Length: 80
Image (tube, rainbow, N blue to C red; front, side, top):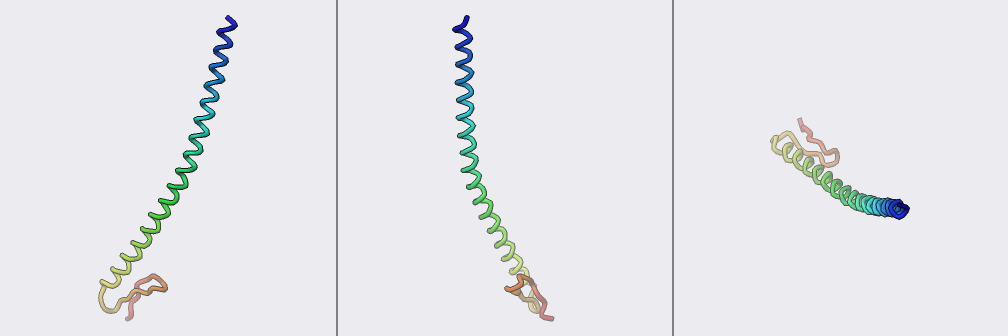
């Protein structure tokens, strides 16, 4: 009977060690992927900002005479 208790205790310790190893691997993977995701999101944000600015400039220029795009302010201005 003592052998059975010792075997269960040994199995419990082995499971705990496996769980700890899996936890360390998961944390490491999440940290690595988190940096990659952050970089990707920043890139997408910059692309969206550029596209928005270009669309506003194109719209302003499409309004016709009397409107011009001010590069320094990033706004469409009326010359009237």
